[in-house]
Structures are given as structure tokens and as C-alpha cells.
Amino acid sequence: MLKKDISEAVIKRLPKYYRYLTDMEKLGVLKVSSKELSERMGLNASQIRQDFNCFGGFGQQGYGYNVKTLREQMANILGLLNSYRAVLVGAGNIGRAIINYAGFKESGFNIIAAFDMNEEMIGSNINGVEVYNVSQLQDYILKNQIDIAIIATPKAKAQQIADTVMDAGIKSIWNFATVDLKLKEDVCVENVHLSDSLNVLLYKTKSSLQK
Amino acid sequence: MLKKDISEAVIKRLPKYYRYLTDMEKLGVLKVSSKELSERMGLNASQIRQDFNCFGGFGQQGYGYNVKTLREQMANILGLLNSYRAVLVGAGNIGRAIINYAGFKESGFNIIAAFDMNEEMIGSNINGVEVYNVSQLQDYILKNQIDIAIIATPKAKAQQIADTVMDAGIKSIWNFATVDLKLKEDVCVENVHLSDSLNVLLYKTKSSLQK
DNA sequence: TAGATTGTTAATCGATTAACAATC
DNA sequence: TAGATTGTTAATCGATTAACAATC
Image: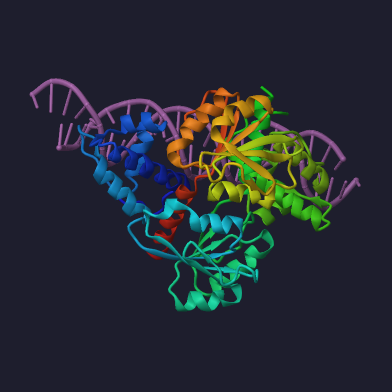
């Protein structure tokens, strides 16, 4: 019973389901009920069943869910079985950390080139990823079937880069610059706003100290 | 009219308000109405007024809000006027990127030491931050009035580090390991789950391609 | 079969949005 | 003063939770 529109709240929980199911499968757990999963994950069992049923009925009454099957379903829903080609723009500290980040290995997410405007970075190689001059960005995207652009530039450059990659046909952006990009209607974005996250942490820190 | 409990939804919007107000102040904007701010930020004007009034009445009927004053109030609410001492655990790619990240300069957030278990890292210096053996972590926290621990270790080590820093009295954790830490009641956490964020991006990418 | 647990509808709760009196 | 815009209460909307018939 595929719903037309999955709410952002549900989408944000999907990776967490996938993580717990992956861990459980590795531990050799064969089946799980929504009740048991709710206790492990700190969610409500009804909510878990509702979430799963946005995408289809994966369970069996009286039994629960098969862990392996459910994990595979989640991987499929999340698009982890597909292969994606990404370029990184901004080979600074964060950009290099992203390239070197090991967490991508499992998925079909591949960073195939990086771009920077710093002459010293251009021509270098970060963990197998070549760094090109950002002036070549648009041309490279057009010629290499790129799905995703990762923006890890300073704030001030981010919108301009977003415009460039959208002009080259990019529909999906992973944005690490702490700025709200203005995007075309059909372009999706996922933000990692480090300084916003720190601000939230400082708020919570202050609040908890006041108690 | 300070509410006892500010909802997570409101808290997550505070850094965004702060960002827009900071930008506007830099541009020389003196006053702003909730309506104008709502148009700039893509939020509802009622929501903005509700959010602000969780912390007090900062506006003036018929006029709006003074940008400078409001920005200062936001900085104060977020705890940016306070000074915080943090240690980083895990001086890998992400850990080093965090230390080098320029976005902290403004705030009173200071990383004063780093810890790792890799012998090659220990004793090195990252942008002025010394890397110590993780075996000294607890002792260091006890002796140096640390407010915040940043966990940037592999998943498998994160819980153990969390336990260690909590035992040393830490009440606030910035967690970059993609794992849900089990924390004591009075400890707050802010997560940056890169691989969850990527999974959400891949989900959106897949969904938007299907249209 | 009896017990367990799903899938789904209904009830509740909280967050967002609208409305408007207060007032600068 | 008249117009504008807040602060706040009320209405709406959507997300979470509860309930339960269906069924393995």
C-alpha cells in the first residue's frame, strides 16, 4: 500500500531502522516483532508498524518480521542497492574527511572526482580521488553522468556552486555549507550543518547546566 | 514568558534564526517584522512569533524587531556568549576536520585537547591541539574542567568512550559516530550521523529520479 | 487450535497556522 | 491619530499512539 508522499519524519527514521536491522542480522537474530524492535530502538511499536506499512506489508501476523528480509527491504527502499556517482566540490578539511570516510564502502555511493579553486590542491589525489580545477566542474558533470554533487565549500561560494551543478543537470545535493541553498523545484538536498548542530549542542549544554 | 520545556522542533530552528539575523545585521538591516523574516526564511510568520515568545517578548507592536537586539538575544539563548571547553576523542579524518573547522571561531567553543589510541597520532599536534593517549582521557577531564566531549571514533568504540567521559562527569556530548549512545538521564547529546544523512540523501535521490 | 502479532482504523496529542485584541 | 505589527488565544493540521479485527 504505497503512500504517495512519505513524511520527512518517516524518512529520517529509515536509516535508523536499517542500522538496527543490520546489527541484528550480524548478531544472528532471525526474527523480530515490532514490540521488540520498539524496545531496542526506543520508539513506539505502533509507529514502527505504521512506518513499515508506508512501503508495504513486510511482516507476518503472529510471527513478526524476518530480520534478513526486512533489512533487505530497507536497503532497497533507501536506494542502497543502486549505484550513484558523486562529485565533491571543495577539497578542504571537511571535503577530505568525506572522501576518506569509511562509512560509504557498503553502499553504491562513489565519489569519482573532486574540485577546488585552490591551486595547491588542484592536481593532487585524495585517497584515489583526483582534484580538478573548479572551472572544469560543469563540463565534467555533463560528460560523466554524475548523480550527486557534494558541496563542501565555504558558505559564500555554496550558492554559486549549487547554481553551476544544477545548470549541469544535477538533481541531488549533499550540502555541508551552513547556508540554505535556493534550489530548483525538482532538486533535492540533504544538509549537514555542522555549525547549526554545534549551536544546538551549546543550547542544550547551557540548559542542562542551569538545572 | 519563559516556557518550562522548549520543544525539539523549536530548538532546531534557533540556529537558523541566528544565522539569518547575523547575515541581516552584517548587511546593515536595522529592523525586521515577523512577516519579512518569514519570507526570507521560508517559515510561517506566526511560527516565528511563537518561537520567539518561548523566550520572551523581543518585539515592539507596530514596529517589528530590532535586528541587532534580536540577534544578541538569540546568541544569548543559544549559549554562544558563554565559554566552553571541549575535548575531542578520535583524531581520524573526521576528528581532524572538526579541529580545523573554521566555523567555531565566533563562539566560545574551544577544543583544548584530542585523544586517540593510534600510536602514530599520539604526541602529534593538529592545528595547535595536542593529541594524547586515550588512556589519559578520564584523568584529563577530571583535572581540566571540561564541559563537552566530542566523540569521533569508529562506531564500535563510541559507547565505551561515552561511558568513560560520563564517569568523568561530562554532561554534554557531540557525537559523530553513527550509533545511538546509551546515556545517563542528565547527559545531553547532539548527533551528527553522516551515514544516516547519506542514506536519507540516497532515498531522496532515488525517489526524485522515479518521478 | 490458541496465542501472538500484524496491518489498519480510530483516538490522542502536539505542532503549526490563523485570527485578533492589545499597543506601539 | 491611523497603520502596522506584536503577543497570545483559538483553530487546524499532521504525526504519534492506542485499539482491535484479521490472520498466521
